[in-house]
Length: 292
Image 1 (cartoon, helix red, strand yellow):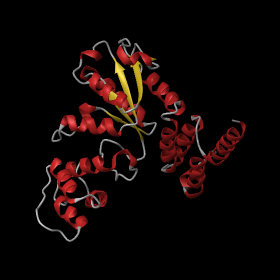
Image 2 (cartoon, rainbow, N blue to C red; image 1 turned 90 degrees about the vertical axis):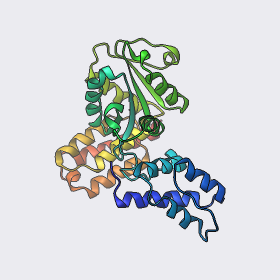
Image 3 (cartoon, one colour; image 1 turned 30 degrees about the horizontal axis):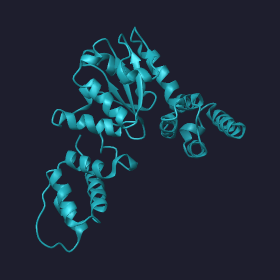
Image 4 (cartoon, rainbow, N blue to C red; image 1 turned 45 degrees about the vertical axis):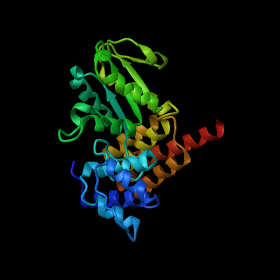
């Protein structure tokens, strides 16, 4: 996906700010690792030097350099920086064998209704991009790895590597038994079982796990608050408040955002019954804080 001028400016400025305080040798070393130009000689301003060296870089190179320097600590990616993730969503890397591509795509569409972005390698990588680099970038930036364990999962050249990387980075791992059996380190995780590959069942179980697991509940709840804030119709407001009513975790900051969204979005506060449900949700969560 081609970056907009605003997105390129954002990336260039962020990269320059991050690198400007390094000594010149480190700056040039970093630029060369990403096949970017350097030049010898004295430069009056390191930030200007970096900008001059990177301003003509390809979109992909800018995105990867920015991610190398900032990583997941940055919450300010423009929407196109990692274009396979929708902004404000919970992120899932879906590990599967290519034989089940259709099922993976079906699950992706279902999870999208929960404000979950799902990375499916066969469709989420543009042909012009380096395949392995995109896989690694998705694994670095995902919140969770969901593995569809079919009978041939272990045979793939890639699935075990994807699992190993995600485990090494401490990501939440959710294996789903779809004809395959637990093996290796996967045996220590709690498994979902769906021998018939029931996509609706997997979706509902994923909601339960993400809303309760300590590794996911805050970020998943935040994604649903983001979805509620962007309610664009009376119907979507009712759908989105229903999702929030199902979660077990909403801290005081998220509750404030729900209240502000209600007060400022007419599609929410004029939607039948939503005002009462917002009040009841906030009251319920506030009571739970005092009783726990």
